[in-house]
Image 1 (cartoon, helix red, strand yellow):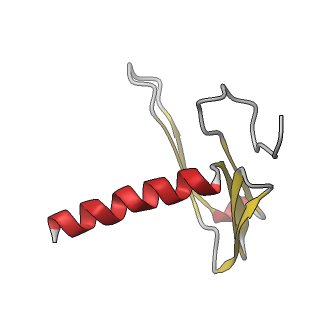
Image 2 (image 1 turned 135 degrees about the vertical axis):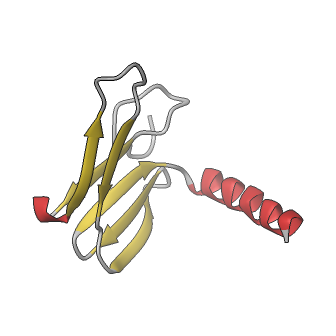
Length: 92
């Protein structure tokens, strides 16, 4: 397998990881005991320090207070951004 992955997931899924430098930067973690299985994680990455695609397969967003990594290739990112731009144009 070429390229890095931030998580072990099925090949068609996109894994992610979040690492914050302090638990003080976590705003909310919600795990419900109700019938739905939604999970919410909110925090603060701080001021954007660096944005990069690592080994062509992982989008890395580095902030002053933490890092978000998402299994997302450059081509997938551009494809999604293109769809978003088209939707914005159609709505405007």
